[in-house]
Length: 389
Image: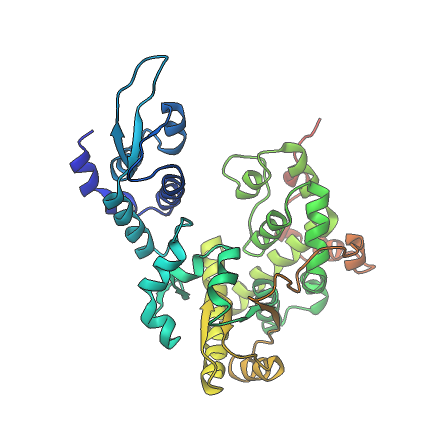
């Protein structure tokens, strides 16, 4: 492999988001394992796990590694030092694609790069898919607390934004409230339901949250390699079967399917694919966030946007903010409050009692209502189930 050619192709090879994630992992490893002065002996098996045998892997090796010493079969591996010039170039390229790198000194590097914006608290975003993007959004959770505490210590997230937007859009189309009860029940009991699902499937709470969130854009639950939910469950057939058979999950999926179908029938918007559904949601989310930004600007409160939430210099009067958003967008949005100076958040699960999922389900069966009123929208149950024995 010609290393010069590899270096020239660096930016092209990193245009794919998956390639960018591979590069971030390689850069973070190199920053910890190597120095520019002292060679470190590393077995090729270890390198192969970090640098795939692909054009991207060869590119990363050429940018990050300087080979030293000699290889003696069965006795000595090659040694390597860090290619500082290539490392800096890779970090800069990843930053240009809105990736931050968790490496020694990276927070100071970010402070230097965005010094003007951090001094004025006026941030320059790029726009993509109706969202504001900025490299500082990608800091690790622990780094965010350290980085933002002196600048914008108050942190606000929209409460269950995607389910709330879908619920209110469906209501606007005139869908009967009784058919939206599973979505409403999830919003009201989301914290306990996420924890309950995590316990039922023996998975992290964040994975449970990600699984549930995917249902709101019509994600499928099936035991095949192309199913994101199946990958999240580490391709565990028993867990997938358990997930498919949870009554409240089936009711929620049916309610979501009906909501999107009704939105499509009334507004003529295309909702067949997940991308189309997310497009409708992101457009609504953008209206809500722009209204919030207008309110913060009018109240002279410097802020930094993070998808459906924001960080601020001063506390926000949330009742007035919600009233402003409703007046300007029609959406009724609540916010969770955090502070970057404390680890506590309103979503903390520690020592919290977890009620049974059935406590969030109405006495009647919404699933039965769906089956009677909208049989053409519902797949036969056996299509959702996978054999476990």
